[in-house]
Length: 278
Image 1 (cartoon, rainbow, N blue to C red):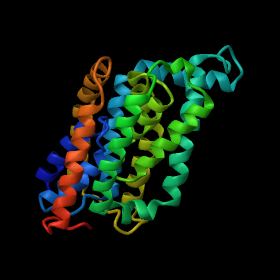
Image 2 (image 1 turned 120 degrees about the vertical axis):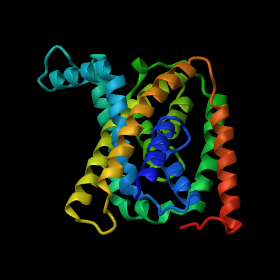
Image 3 (image 1 turned 180 degrees about the vertical axis):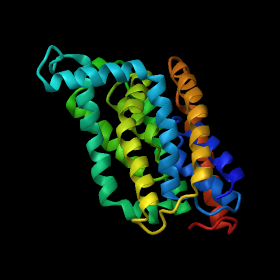
Image 4 (image 1 turned 90 degrees about the vertical axis):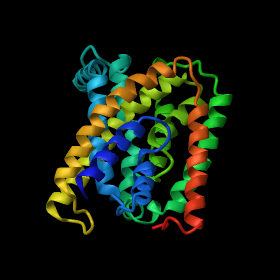
């Protein structure tokens, strides 16, 4: 991987990670459009550390409060099961279980078969329609104080769908939240918090494999990858702030239209022989 490629993909990662349009799909598609090799699941996972660092910084007060309350709840202190911050800590852990289990079970497929551009483009289109329907029928009344264990698991299963490039981690979890009746901003906020353990875990796991050479194909060009990760952090921080403001009054329709257009365009380029599917 070259430095120019790293700059482009780092900017793409930062711009698309938190929008419901799938960062992994865009990294895969941009690489093909420019004639670059597939950046691979390892590059994607490691650069996501940058965008999750943006989440840690933006929500630092919320996350700090949640971590402290959760640790106190382990000792049975005043932060018991009814404390909202302690509950949120447990719900984030519970919601992270599905993606951890499925990610480990299907790691080989995620890194190979599911990166086929035909699958990526189809996922972009199909799940955009699910997001559109959720945005239309969701009551958008519930806030995060009403989050239950059952809802946390539903969110977690939706997040696990993002193991398929093209689904979108934020798009999947926000869609689940809308179907459950949560407001757009509440669904997005929990989506960002829920992603922290899974994304950081995946990123550091891929980095470990690349450093130790435990898995063939996990090699990483570290200089360009670190640059891409830093760029993803800076851009991602700006996108988080913008999206949360936008969702106070805007809908997901522009993202739905964008996903459909990009998905159909990629399918057309693949079946027209312009882009190789794998």
